[in-house]
Image (cartoon, rainbow, N blue to C red; front, side):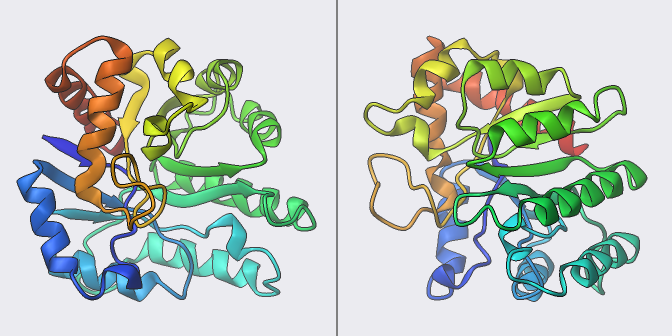
Length: 262
């Protein structure tokens, strides 16, 4: 069985065939989907899906870094995140992580300090509520490593979602806490710079993810991504690590269950 540790299947791209996409997950032996939050515009969509499929999906709560940009109310939005962590909405038993949080300087570096402040605030929430963090990083790996090194020894745990940096960052971040690394569709791309990094990673440090509807793996690149496609990522990791598919499936599922306390 597989776990997609990062699925946005609650997004509008799936409105026409969400039930069918979830059935394709079952057929592909994808047993659980972890749902990272984005911001207040999509929370209710995520809640509705979690209520409809309580055995198959697990929601998280957080404020995405790009939702800090050009947002004069981001501090109030963080208060809302913590309010939900304290008291989940009706029909939601609990949240399983603080995410999707992090740093994203791809679109603009003008909000770097605000993003760092929002990220740190949510890491502190993860410590208060004893939850893993799910961390988005884009064009900000050095900043991310520097911020996380300040948490070394404090018991922070979680996943660096869509890991895409080098072996040096992997080794630096491992020293900061109990961290796993989300490997997604990028690893299947031709001439992927991530593939040689994965070859050097320890399988016990890896979880699988799709980030659907984004970052679609080969052979479906250019199409909408979906959680059932995590099987292609599993197969590619098995190829890179020189082990069979079942070994990768079993280990990455065990890794995900451990970090999320499933």
